[in-house]
Length: 195
Length: 164
Ligand SMILES: Nc1nc2c(ncn2[C@@H]2O[C@H](COP(=O)(O)OP(=O)(O)O)[C@@H](O)[C@H]2O)c(=O)[nH]1
Ligand SMILES: [Mg+2]
Image (cartoon, rainbow over all chains, first blue to last red; front, side, top):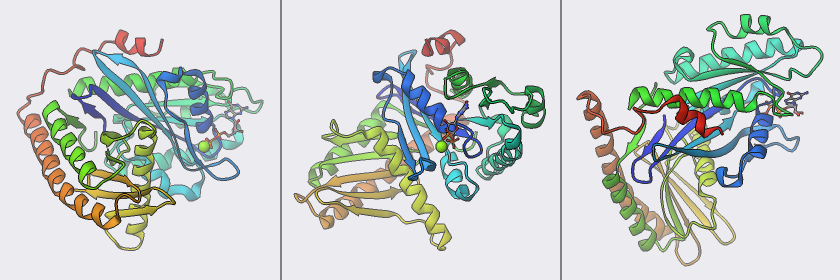
C-alpha cells in the first residue's frame, strides 16, 4: 500500500526483506546503508536483542531520487527470522508493496528456507496478498561459503514461479543493490498500472 | 493488491495540516504528527527539526501494531490510546478511524488531560476527513477517473536513474 502525496510530491513504498533467521537480511540493509549518500538515507533502526538478533524489525528509509517531479522513498524493513517471532513477522508485512526473499545458500539451511517461504505465503495470504501478484525477488545469499547448494537446485525448490533471482554475498555487497533494484522497479511499475 | 493505496491531494492535505496546527497550539504540544498504519509520515506540526520523524513514524506504527496484536490475544479489539511518560517529554498516541495514528509529544507546559481533550476533538474532524478521502478515491476508481498521473509515463530509464 503505497502512499502518494500530491501535496508534498512524495511517494512512499514499503519493501520487506523476508527469510529464515541468520540468512543475511539485516546485513543487506547494513550494506545499503553504508553505500548510500547521507542525504539519501535516514537512520538505520534496529530493534535487536543483546545478541544483535533482530527482535522486531530493522528499518531503513531511502530516498533515492525523483521520478517525474515526485520524490520516491523506499522504506526497507526486515523481519525477525526465528520461528518464535511469527506474530511480529505478520505485523511487518502489513501494507507491504514488495518482498525480497533472502535464502541462505548453505545446504544445511535448505529446510529453514523452505519453512520460511511457506510461512511467507501463509502470512501474505492472511492479508489478501498472493505472492505471484506481488512485486517479488529472490536472493540466494552467502554464495561465498563452501557448502552451498547449486543454484539450479535452489531455483527448483524455492523459485517455482520463476521470478527474478540474484546470487549474493551480503557481507561484501555482491548482489545487494541488484536485488533491491529489481524489486523497487517492480513496485514502481505496479504503480504505473494502478495510476 | 490488497487494500487501497493512500492518495492525498493538495486541498485534503491542507485541511489535515490545518487541523494539526490547531491541535499543536491548543494542546500546548511540542510536536504533533500523523502517521499511517504502515509507518509512513503523513503530516506534522510544531518543531520537528530536532526529531527524526521518519523513524519515529515507523516505530510508532510498529508500536501500535504490536499493542494491537496484544489486544487481540486478550480478546480486545484494539487499544486505541497509548501513553508513554518520560522524564521531560510525554507521548500520546491514538488511533483514528482504524487507519491513521495521531501522535502528540508534550512536556510540563501541557497536561495529559488537556491533550486528551484536544485529541478527541481533532480525532472527530480527522475521521471525517479521511472518510471523505476514502470515498472520493473509491468513487474515482469506480468511474475509472484518475487524476493526471505522474506514474503513467514512468519508463525503465526513470527507474534506472534512481540507482545511478
Ligand atoms: N559468509 C557470509 N556471511 C554472511 C553473509 N550475509 C550475512 N552473513 C552473516 O550471517 C550472520 C547473520 O546475518 P544477519 O544479517 O544478522 O541475518 P538475519 O537474521 O537474516 O538478519 C551475520 O554474522 C552475517 O555477517 C554472506 O553473504 N556470507
Ligand atoms: Mg536480522
